[in-house]
Length: 63
Ligand code: SF4
Image 1: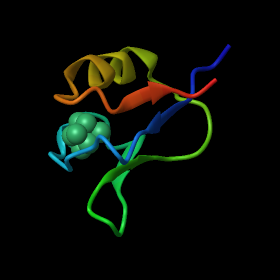
Image 2: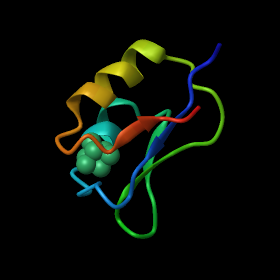
Image 3: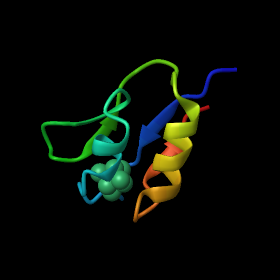
Image 4: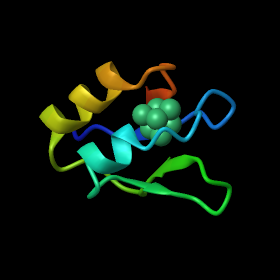
């Protein structure tokens, strides 16, 4: 099943790592924090990397 992700904005510090790593999935919201685009993720490997790389662990799988 396709994976979905979301960003926990309470944790996100807006470092931009996920946005630069997987721009197809992550973007900055008006609040300067990252958010995931809606819908299933096409490149799960890249998203897994983003989840692992986020310095504050703010990216979560959305089940
Ligand atoms: S990598 Fe984590 S802290 Fe950095 S912008 Fe993305 S969700 Fe926010």
